[in-house]
Every structure is written in C-alpha cells, then in structure tokens.
Length: 180
Image (cartoon, rainbow, N blue to C red; front, side):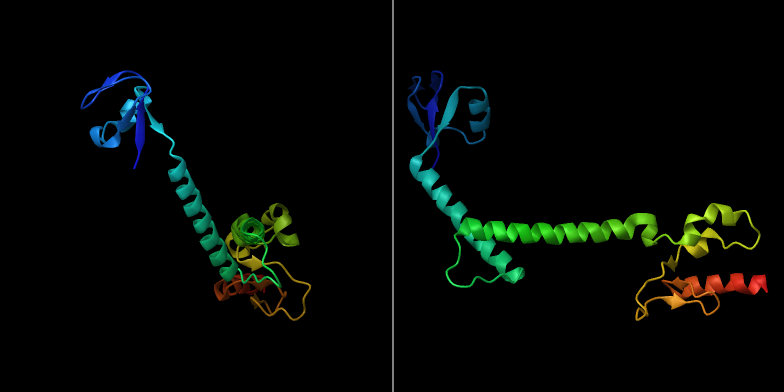
C-alpha cells in the first residue's frame, strides 16, 4: 500500500496541509503520477516496504544465480561462497561465453565468412588476366589449413583448393576445363 504526503496544500476528500499524510484511497490512481510530477504530493518511503522489496530482490538474485549455475554447470566444493561471489562467478562465465559468441560472429561475418587466401589478396592482379576465376567462384573457397586430418569442405583434385560447398567446387572445376 502506497502512502503519500502533501508537498503543497491539496484537497481530495478534505483539505490536506503541507506534510500531512494522504491515504492512497482518496487519490485517483490515474492522477498520482501527474500530482507527483507537479510537486503537489510525494510518495512516502515505507521502511517495511523497502525491507520487503530488498527481501524479494535477494530471493530473485538467489534464484537467478542457482539457474545460471545449473546452466553453466558450476559446482562448489566444500562450503558455497556467498550469493554475491557466486553471482560474480556466473557473470564472468557469461561474459566469456558472450565474448566467444561475438568472436565467432565477427569471424563469420568478415567477407561473408570467407577467410582470405593468397589468391584472394592478389585478386585485383588476377582479374586482369584472361584465365582468372570470377569472384563469385572464389567466395565459396576456404583457406587451406595446417591440419592434415581436416576433411571439411570439398577439395579440387587439380589444384587442391578447398571449397565450403559442392556447388563452389563444381563452379571452380569449370575454370580448369576452360584452361584445357
């Protein structure tokens, strides 16, 4: 239950002097905000309400931290740290996850997800020659990896370039057929 006090003399069910408490039952709820903003009344802080709000906030924090610990698979050996230390641990892990997702997102969005290769860096020079590939065919190409066990992508049997899709490889193979 909200309580209000008159900041200026006001009249509702009767006249209220400055500093006098006004029961919320006599104030139209639709006018409270306008009366407060106009400086005619003020909301009274109720110590009991503040304590209840603090208790609710603490309960909400505990629930949130417990759910985050479960999702992030965080366990505590021995005595569990206080709720604020647990919240800080959860938030640092959430930050790490978010940063990892942002890094992945950034690397996926650079040049439409294509990692530049030596051929891509010199593409301006190659586009001047008659036997160059069209840029749309290079868009599907993936950079060579140092890992010999990496079998992802579609590899050209002629020049060993690797492509993300079969369509990219098929399009690329046409360039070898044109050169013959």
